[in-house]
Amino acid sequence: MNTFFGLEIGSRALQANQTAIDVTGNNIANASTEGYSRQRVSLAAAEPYTVPAFNSPASAGQLGTGVTVEQLQRLRDTLSDMMYRNQVKQQGYWDSQNDVLNKIQSLVSEPGGAGLSDQLQQFFSAWQELGKDPSPANRTIVLQNANGLVDFLHDFSAQLGEANQGFNSTLTAKIAELNTIAGQIADLNSQISKVELGHQVTAPNGSTTIVRVNNANDLRDKRDLLLDKLAAYGDIKTVEDAVSGMVSVTIGPGNTLLVSGDAVAPIPTYTDAQGNVFPGNNASSPIDLGNGVIKGYLDGRDQSLKNVQDALDQFAQELVGQVNAIHTAGNDVYGNPGQKFFLDPNGNLTGVTAATIALNPNITQDKIAAGTGNPPASGDGSQAQKIANLQYALDSSLPPTSGGPLTAGQTLDSFWQTTIFNLGLEGQQATGQSTNHQLMVKQLDNQRQQTSGVSMDEEMTNMLKFQHGYNAAARLITVMDSMIDTIVNRMGITG
Image 1: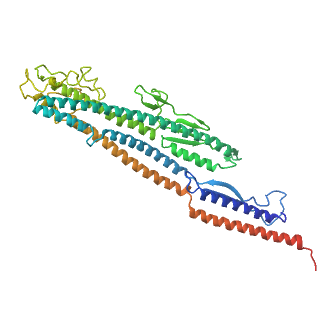
Image 2: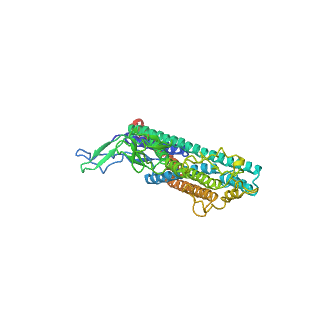
């Protein structure tokens, strides 16, 4: 101990309180910064004087030597982070599903006056009028409405195909985003390890402690924010290395390695024979990323969109089979047997889809088999009426020609309405689940903020506390200065 011992205590107090004020100011400045975790100064008593030893001077006890800044602590709740990311992936999945279904529903345009149901109504109405009056004018209207229905099916199928390609582009972009975020995490791993890289210290009892010089608090905040974003893409798991501070990241139920230290293993993509994009190297080694944005788009494309496209193709097959069966049983105006109204490339409807359905080019208005007889009697529209009746009930003598979708008592219109109804239920579920998970994510984020968020009231209180501590330390130094001044300048002075 010496005369300046008290000055050193005051100096340490000044430095500690100055650091605490700086940290408080940094918290206030970043109160609205996304991903920022509030920081706290951990103060500890400095090593007392004297250290126990054989040659230690005798004294009443150890004397404190002031205060030191032990560490700048980042306040973070890792359990809340895990729960938050688990909900983020669920929200990502349902948000993607909702996006896909909204786009499909906009193409379907049902209910409304611009969908397939309206086109089908016009088609059957034309046959209804032809059944009442098989005149040349009504025959022409039948051909016009048939062409309109065929064109609608072509356009609808093409739009669904374009939507499919759009979802493929979205999937490619989302996987690229995932890989970009993974690369940024790997870069931050490298920076964090340079700041925090510690070493293991083994105590005599065999216990091991990791000793670090610094905490890379701001870099860790950036990394946690990226992990929050990455969690939306799939089911991620993280493991932190105790020595370097780096995290390893795996994704999906198969724990596919994505980030290992400062190295990243990007998720590859492949395209199947139908032009659809998937995560993985090839069809024999796909990568399951678990629930998240990417799975939401995959399921939306391969289930919801495919179901509508398949139903549309089945509709086209059934329409061709039913109309052709009735039309070929009638006779045209010359008494010739009716030809197939729609083209049937393979003779068994397997070549008929919404994209390939076509009218028989040999069918002109006089070759429409509206009646029976050789030639049909004037005003005979019996076969046309049978086709019109398909709107309400299939001909019991004509089972579903395609062996396909229609059940007993179901019509073409009711089959399509069932498809629309199921699509609506899917959309309703996706919207509800998306909203629910958004609320859960917000609630969990609020829970995280109770630990890591900045409270302005608390920070202002801390600022006053540390300000008074700083002022008191300065006052201590002033007192010590006065004491030293007495010793140096006044002792030994006599009158």
